Length: 106
Image (cartoon, rainbow, N blue to C red; front, side, top):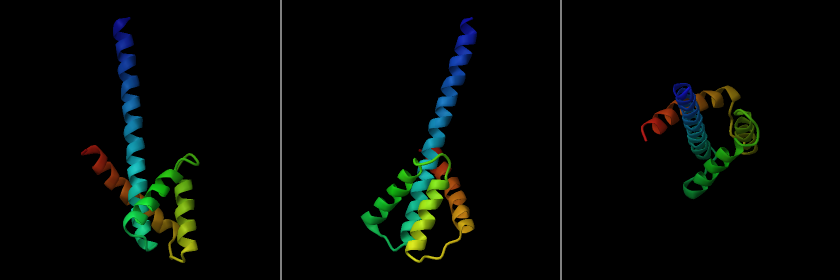
């Protein structure tokens, strides 16, 4: 019985670790996308950092990344920055790869 409990605990620990890692990667992706978007919107320095934080925070509104896309597309539209959802999704995919590299090498 002890070995079954130990295996169960090991699986639970791995699941928890993987979920935390995924959370960190997604948050980093959102920050990187936010910094990219901030540059397109003309934000620099502290204003760009604050904007990136607002992109990260927007991801907590709904499950999935639709809330991030809605925020960014709305901000681009309000600032009259031409952006397609396809281009945004492509950039988010690129930034996901970069975020994964950054988080796993920390």
